[in-house]
Image (cartoon, rainbow, N blue to C red; front, side):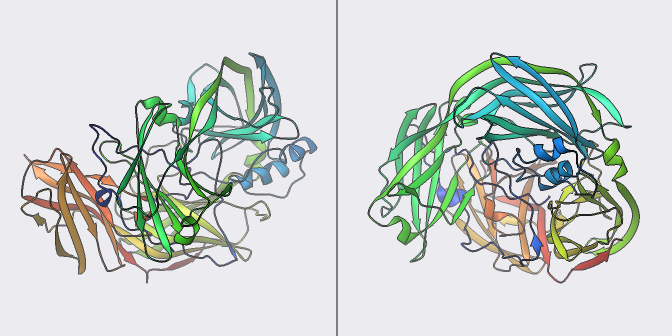
Length: 568
């Protein structure tokens, strides 16, 4: 599995309810949160920049651009100041350096003018900068019903659908826009990993539908000193009921565990609810905000971590805040044929065949390529075992005294199918760091996490019932605690270890008529291999009382396996 990029952790919550709904078993759903699990980085480290665009809580992994020294055109240089490039600092730099092309093609539909202002293409992907003017006097939150990039013959290249529920990622495409106060319009960009052979090509870019989203607020009469689950019927905007449990973590902290059930899918796609704590009209910020990944039934939940003294005082109010659909503008905005040209980026690109071997817990891996493009630095690594990869807690690229923090993905980062033996390291580059294809670079990989498959020794779970039972077994010399029980027609298996070098049990299975019945996994943000080794595995519809359980995927930390490699 690959390390995911951190992002705003506001996730639509779906769980619990009232009446015939079963209440959540928070002990089954939630794992322990470490209050101070974030590691401080040295000031010299340049971290990946967080993106906070139109969609709350969407995780993105994408490349950033590299700043090369050439003369910028005045139009593109001035344009880069109007867009929010918080998540794409290199894109701003590349525009300033003249790598973009001015398009300035507009169309007006339903009284709204949509413009493709410029584009930037290279061998890593394609970016289109756009703006639109719905005649707003102040900022509102708008999303498109559909965004589509096509070839000149009409074949779809990349398509983003579904309003707030859309899946937005680097491969299939994503967009983000923000309000431009000065010009009273919205400026944004669409980006995809798709690219084209040669120097130029013609495409079409089509936007359909505009949907406004507005914050709605429901006051909650929450008592933070009360034990147990407090239920709040909502019955609005497709939201059924909200459950909250306040868990005292001692003198310093308190967890607010919230869960929510929707009455329809549209609300689940739209709401992005959050618990908001206010003191005399000012927001009380949580120290920690985490969200559960869905279990087999699509169950979601969230946890906020607060200081007890911040919420246990007079004047504190609690609200459920969620988004609901507002104005909708139907229409199709098609600016016509766009000619994309990547000649400038080709002149500022370099691909180095390195073939540098280095040792990992899997054996000898090899750095095959270093790829420098205006849209990012990519390092391709071949590993000795297919579909098994070392994960590094820290991956840095040292350039001119600066340490850039990188992250790993499967495959080679483009449109091609994932290659079984390949991983890719991606590095964002800040606008103030200028790089040429010959700039010296050193790769630093620290604290390896070994991903392993199919542990041979089974774990025997006996007398399975609704009561929690616990056993401890040995996995490669590490103690692993197993807590198992039935609830709501499912078997829950919680795992964890007191030894921090054990990275966690990511998936389990049992044999049934010669087939492996794999568990479904419940994560929270704090239970990934680089933070905590605690997990919850779920088997829906399990009816037995005894089970021979096997480990499918698990992790071992190797803090002593650190590597430094000069790339050029």
